[in-house]
Amino acid sequence: MKTFGKFIITALLIALSQNTMAQFEVGLHGGYSGHWILDTALNGNESIHPHNGYYAGIIGSCTFNNDILIETQINYASKGHSDISMNDGHYKRDLYYLDIPVFIGYRLNWRLSLMAGAQFGYLLRAKKNTEGNVIDGRDDCYPCNASLVGQCTFMFTDRFGLNATFDYALTRTFNRPYTNNDGKIEEDPGHNIGFQVGICYKLEID
Image (tube, rainbow, N blue to C red; front, side, top):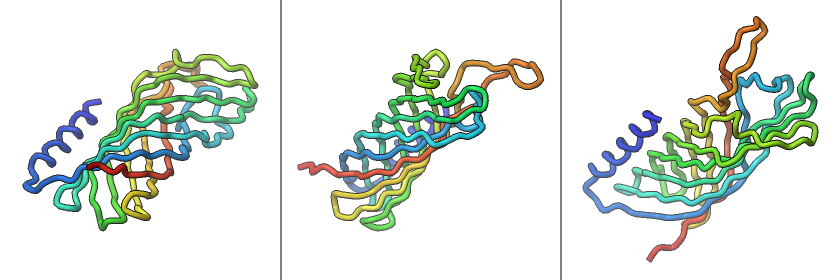
């Protein structure tokens, strides 16, 4: 969380240091979300598959000197993982987050921009599905999540484009300990990792 706070302060300092008028833009985006819970020990991970989900949200961006970008988003995103465990059969975990990333980036031209930043996520709900038996899974998870994020945006027109985002969580997903092969109780090291690909649309602001 400290990393996220420092990143926001850095972004604001960059914005305040600019001497030219900033260009503000607001937009919408959404699309496919593919995620895993990397290194988790819960329910085995013998045959992990990507969790097929979705995301949708709003975008607010500010461009300085026609090339320096500061962008933030508010997104609803489904994450999780699924596997076919030798011990537990078919298993799936669905996690639904409110994600707030903040990016600093560079606009190479009017079509292409590259950005990197930090993301704060809050777990809204969770569910576990084992062989068709669905139960609430929020008690197994930490409510907050911090990640590193990167994004590439390509605009087909002035208002319509495609963006691709990669995120890597720095914090653990689960707060439920497990017993390892040596009989010791350890914290589960699983953390979210994944990507999102979707369309974006810039709204006209008078």
